[in-house]
Image 1 (cartoon, helix red, strand yellow):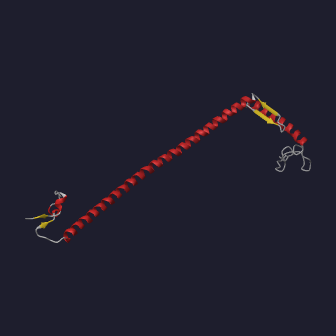
Image 2: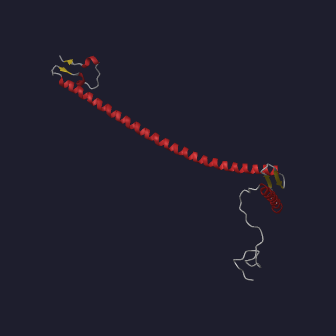
Image 3: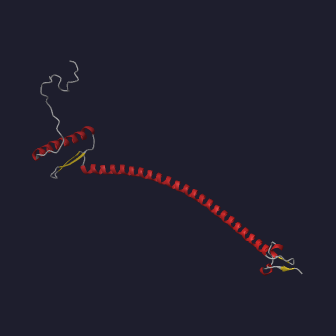
Length: 192
């Protein structure tokens, strides 16, 4: 017998015009007829419970199945106990949640640590810039003070130059730059 790709499995001896036996596909949607819906629920529930049992026996798996009907009736299967399996599930999900939260916390910690390092570097940069600006301000103030002193000295010279010249009088500040004389003696000394 040759292989024909058009033939379906289980129909080796059948011709294409014969009826196929077996289950047909149904559309998965809510069954509107209440009686049909209840019958389907019972059949599928029993099939589901059977599959859960087979899985636990064949694979030595711990299985718990909980089903509530639309009327609120409980149907359950467990190869050990439903409560024990649910507790085991809670512990397993809590452990995975804790592992995820630890991983998330580590990531958050690394991000915050990088932010702190950046802020510290930025603080040092700002302090250096602040010191630079303070030095510039101090330099500017010194230059202003020197300029003001020069202006005052220029005004003093102009005042002396504007006074009428008398050979017998000399201004004290021209005689001694240390200003050892009192303020009263600054006016002028008369030579005798």
